[in-house]
Every structure is written in C-alpha cells, then in structure tokens.
Length: 133
Image 1 (tube, rainbow, N blue to C red):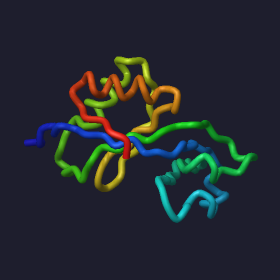
Image 2 (image 1 turned 60 degrees about the vertical axis):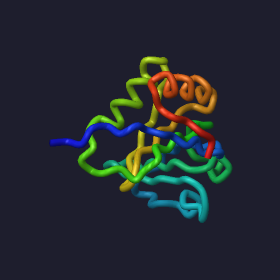
Image 3 (image 1 turned 90 degrees about the vertical axis):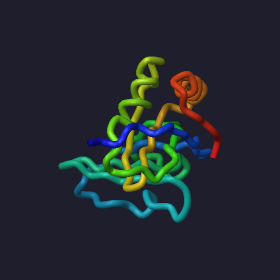
Image 4 (image 1 turned 135 degrees about the vertical axis):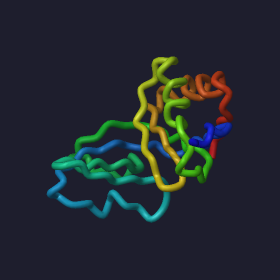
C-alpha cells in the first residue's frame, strides 16, 4: 500500500534560475555545473536541458528566465504517492505554470520569478509551509 502524502514544507531558493535548451550532441558545458547552488541537467533524445543560475548562462544560449526554485523538504520515501500532484494541483488552481524536477531525495518545482508571491500564497492556502531558504 502506498504511503500517504506527508505534510509538505517548501524552501524557496534565493537565486534566479534559467531553463536552457541545448543540443544533446553538444555535451554538458562546464558553465552548466557550478560548484555551488542549484543546477540540474537532463537529456531526452536530441535535447539537453539545463537549469542553473541566470548569471552562469552565456548570452547566446536559448533560455527562459528568471525562475525560482521551491524545494520540498526531504528526503521522501520512494513509496509516497501524490506529492507532485498535491503541489502542482494547488499551483495550477492559481494559474501558475510550473517546471517540476525530481531528484533522488525530493522534488523541486521551478516557477517564474514574477509568480513567487502567488505561488507562495497558493501553497500556503493548500496547507503547505513555505519559507525562504
């Protein structure tokens, strides 16, 4: 039987992030893997997606920015069901687009920087705790 969704708490990371698109054949560039802060790289077929600090992205790289990361305090067990549905549903109900990312220990959801206040309000209205990291 799946574990129930726990009471969720989010930490909002302080840095502005970019979501970048590269060709998979280009490989992962060094700028995409800073020594500190949040970053994520994923590859799907011909597409390489990079999420990292805005100030790391070269001007010529296709990107959307600025975004902010809401990190679910973890770690969470692998048998917990409905975590992403719980928070993305609350954000969708508030009309806030999201870019969810899963890691081994937790979930991260990127929202446009302009939507941070609305996302915070929507998550709190749904019963979640939200704090600045």
